[in-house]
Length: 149
Image (cartoon, rainbow, N blue to C red; front, side, top):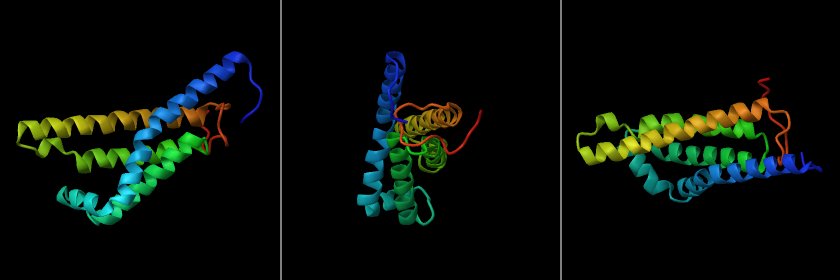
């Protein structure tokens, strides 16, 4: 909640806010692409074997948008982090199956993207745990939806 804080508490809240902003930039930009370029992205998703590709692209764009805005604005940020985790793990497996590639360069590219998605999933999981555990989240609009401690 927004109220007066001691300098150290304010500094920590500002650092966490900056971290939240930096974390969600990727997801918000990706969400815009998924929603505004759904046709082209659906073709790529279909080539990867994703069922109902256009619907999946639009749905994943909405999940990224809601999750990203939730974390950015601090509105049930724990739920937003959980949504991004739920988006990232299937995306890594379905869209970047490096184990299926035979071309070394394509395999390396897919492995990098797979690992990036897993690393972001790990960060989203940590954010979920952080937001659901800490009672005072600093510069947020709401507290957590879930309570882990």
